[in-house]
Structure formats: C-alpha cells, structure tokens
Length: 245
Picture 1 (cartoon, helix red, strand yellow):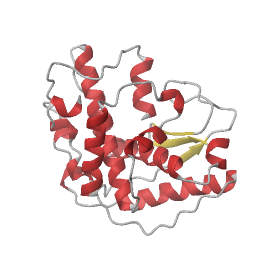
Picture 2: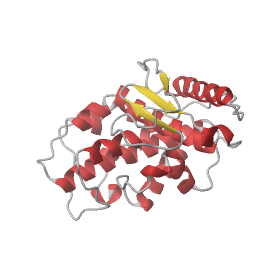
Picture 3: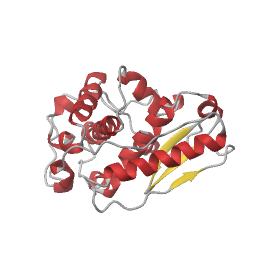
C-alpha cells in the first residue's frame, strides 16, 4: 500500500521482514476492539463495471468502482463519509506522501481521499485487474482512516524501537490486505493468484519496498478476508507476532 510504505521510507526507516521479539498491542481499543470487527459479511454488489481503453472510460470505471465500494462498505461503516477521487495530471508523476516518482498509473489513499494517476498502462489494458487491485487497496486505507484505525496506528507508542515500528506497520498493512480481499469477495471476483493481486496494488517502483510481511502471512490474511467476505476476521492487532511477521 503506497501511503504506508512511503510514510516509513520517507522517515529513513529500514523495513524488516520479521522479528524475533513479540510486540503485543495494548491500550489501543480503536485497533484491538474496533466496532468494525463486529460486522458481518459485506453485501454482494450489484454494480456492473465496464472498463474501456480510453482515458474517459478508465476514469469513469474508477469513479464507478469507488461509488460501488462506498455502497458496499456502508454496512460495516454506517458513518462512512463521502470519498472523493482526485485525478492528477499525466505530467504529475509523484505520489502523495513520499513524492516518489512513478512512470505509470497508480491509486493511493492520500489523507481522506483517493488520489489517482491514469497513464497509458491502465488505459490500454483491456483487463481491469490491475486497476481494480490498486483502487480497492487504496479503499482499504480509507476504511482504516474512517474507522479511526489509521489515527490509532499513528498514535501507537513504540519506544523508538525499529522492530516494534516495523511490526506495527505490518499489522496495518496486513489488515488492509484482509479488507481488500473482503471487497473482492463482495464483488464476486474469483482470485486464482493472490501474488498478481499484490503486484497490481502498487506500481513497479514500490515492489522492492518490504513492509507488508512474509508472503505466507499476506496470503493467509487475504484468504481469511476473502473466505469471510467481511472485516470481522481482519483484527491483525490482536494476532500473535508470528502471524504478522
């Protein structure tokens, strides 16, 4: 997820793939006991999304997808506020937080809105898989912001210990994977290869940034979210460290 990977990298931190220590999250009810975990399955969407191969049709597809996601997630997030999509000009290649330059398309959660750059790669692609992956991933960040999870994560104490900071970030990003998978289920999307979904979420320039956790754990949380079809199983904040390594 672009915004979280950048937030850490911009601070000059080194992301680790695992840690030998356990860092349980305590005293943060917005994370460990959030109301969203009490919600059931997301309703099946009835939206019909059509992506063409023009800038206009791709832009419309993205707007329609965000509208559909808003309707779908209104059930577990009753106070969901309208989410704006900001399209940047083609010449604007830098992402929101870290200002890293990206050659192609991207979608990212930027504060309370979704920021999108539509370039030739998404426009020419007849398949919507990469666009869908990137936008639903950004949407998961929006859910975390609107449920108070994002701010609670930022406020977590860490004692300045890098391994603990890394684990907290992984908990956040693995939860986003779980939310994203629930969205896939609500849209009736069949997933045969989660790795391709993960690769589609971020532009290639971000693929070398390691902050999401071990592939097995990413797969595990994604499968849980997909099978449940909702956020009830996405409480990464109470999971043992081994499950968020």
